[in-house]
Length: 414
Ligand SMILES: NC(=O)N[C@@H](CC(=O)O)C(=O)O
Ligand SMILES: [Zn+2]
Ligand SMILES: [Zn+2]
Image 1 (cartoon, rainbow, N blue to C red):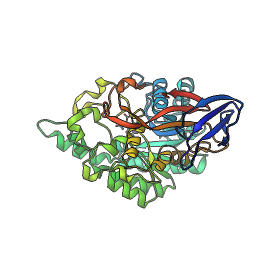
Image 2 (cartoon, rainbow, N blue to C red; image 1 turned 90 degrees about the vertical axis):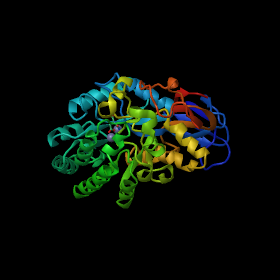
Image 3 (cartoon, rainbow, N blue to C red; image 1 turned 90 degrees about the horizontal axis):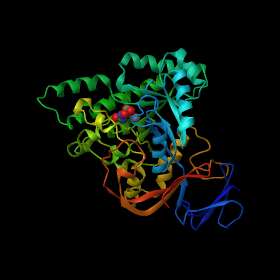
Image 4 (cartoon, helix red, strand yellow; image 1 turned 135 degrees about the vertical axis):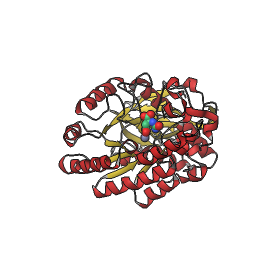
């Protein structure tokens, strides 16, 4: 053994366990103590499979004043995450072979957590080249494209699936561009706009229409659809009915659009926070849910440019775990769902075969949880460059106290 993690509680099991690690893999799980290796005593806390965030924006290259792969990955580790999936809307976009190659070099050099990269869509010819670098999926921002372009993108992705080893997984930002434009233009007629207007400029029906369209296009082209940051209840019902996977962010679960009156453009995000009656809630989390934080850091300056010009996005890697564990402590969320929604389900969707559970032979990636640890969220302790959060100052119960990757501690608050 290289390392032995001692005094571990495991979910659904009684008693304390010891977990042996050899060459970065789980080699032994036993109640009976054993010797031979460096010891990590986690003091009776809960050992969970390393958390996976399938939706982060690390802004590297091109936007590193907002975040870079070093600070982003440190933020992930500090928040309890061992693996992240980064989005392609950097500068340049990660939609060419060269740009993906460049990002892999950056991430290899700077990341302290495991990472996977999504690629942006491009011509079929370019996407064929991109596939040789194994992006984990293609991402389509449906809010930025018109219908004709979307038809073509999905058709090309279908062809790509036939002609290359591409697995056919397409992750989508679902909001309908035409509806957004129409509603935004209406609201701009008002004499003065307030942050709350943003919620109505991109209404739930824009998301619902887009989800419907994405499901149709994916079916037509034999693609495997995954819906990012799903926020509308109706969209959720559509996804469930059609057996399509989806992610929830912590802010869409926990805040409604009345928060715009408190936090202003700080909580501007896409899709926007919704009216209480249309939104998803903690009670919508089930066995199949995936939490994707949509960690979308910006500078304070970028966040303070008025209703229409402020950058949309909220950093979330360092708040999501205490926020969800607080819901567990309040009895609103079953503890047994935590390893599923934060690790297992994303590992399955993205085919991360060695991740998502604690078993012999799996990668030695762990998140250690102290369910009773209380505190107040404090952005001053964040590793992200983004210095804002609507949850700053909020009391929590339950925290990730240690993050272990390949058997090595990358963050420690024990
Ligand atoms: N969610 C956001 O409001 N912003 C994201 C983009 C995105 O995920 O749509 C960003 O990159 O800042
Ligand atoms: Zn998005
Ligand atoms: Zn995003």
